[in-house]
Image 1 (cartoon, rainbow, N blue to C red):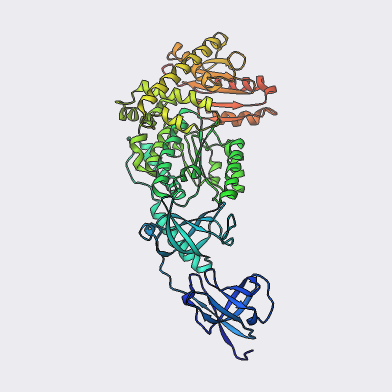
Image 2 (cartoon, one colour):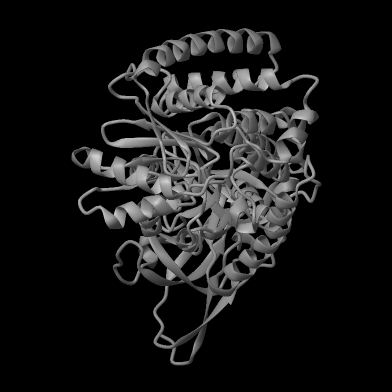
Length: 615
């Protein structure tokens, strides 16, 4: 044994056999044993053999060991012999590695390259382990094989910064790196790479700075928050963060969500090499209620956590459209907070400030002095154009459909209608909106992606679109006519102290259940009919069920979210909750308190100011 302080070398990441010097002593790790000796790993890419005649002690697998390089053979095999030292100093051997941007892999087929980036996904197949790596220029896959179904490089996981070396190949017409070494970077090395990637992605994720389709003061005021939200979505695509898009299951919410779906899916296809990326990186799900229910987030968590374990995915970005702005979302948000979920919202329901603590971005016209007349579909289409301007021609008719469906009286709707009047006149927009509502009723919680695209004429098959919409509208109108005919004789009329006309329609006792139209739609149809019969009069319609009331109003200046809060405090044991827009919404309660809640609600409606006989 030596009495002086010797130098021991440690091979750094990226070092190869040619960096090993005969006669030098190296710090290695015992990899395994054979009858003829011990295998020692000098780094992830370089290993050698201590013949049993050159071993001095016994070691456990993965134990550190000092070895001297006796010979580097022409074929790359390294002969080692064990050494024992009392004192030594360690010097890391770093190789200056020239890394290749992922965007250049197409020019490197058949060549050995080194890349650095973040692991966006780690998926174990029945054969190799597939590492999805992200750098400042793109996303590609790297395959590492030990033996069938065995996890390669288990020390590296999703979110880690790594350096990968290997040969660029083409498999099933897709680029792939055949991994020869993978090193997990730590400390300053990782920080430098991560900072470089973050800076480039931050610039790349900037949304398009384009004018809106229409003139709108509200949209202009919303632009900064819309750009912030669009940037978050684009960055999620570029970093392989899955997106779950939740939306209210009506024509407005569907139009908003499908506009964004079109933009995001197209962006995924353009920028990610895997042909099936869109199916595991994007999921659109309708929500029955206009808020993020516990049932919704439970379904989403079940889906996302299974995929995180099975496929090594990141936890997703939750994107809520036409819902997400109210206190009713709070229970779901608190669950999301447990899992550190990123949540963003684009909504036009009257917002509650308390939800903003849970959100990374919140687009809502009420924040800038607007109101629900600027519908979710209008905002969603403009967001989609920011996310991916290339889809504009396909989706520019969706705001008109959304506005008509939500009975918007905004200054924006006539402009959106004028924009597409040649192909989608007002009556056609109404038909498409009704067809959407009718089909979504039967789809329940399913997104019906291709059927919905046919209804909205996004599948480049205008004949099928026309036939399908015509058929669905006929069925929907027959169902509505039957429901209204059955219910109207049972509608109760009252005159409030304010002079407003109040109509009560029991949509449980005197309407067909579990079929189209559902209670909300039925209430809306009854309200429209009553407004026509009493033109110029302030009218409020209550669609009453055993434990809910659907409210529709014309000319009575209610504030439904405020009324819900007051009723909750005033009626002990009522279990009151609900919300919606200021004059359109719903209230839930316990069935045993039905009469108390309804009469208290009517009293509050009677106190609301009336816009006037010509409202």
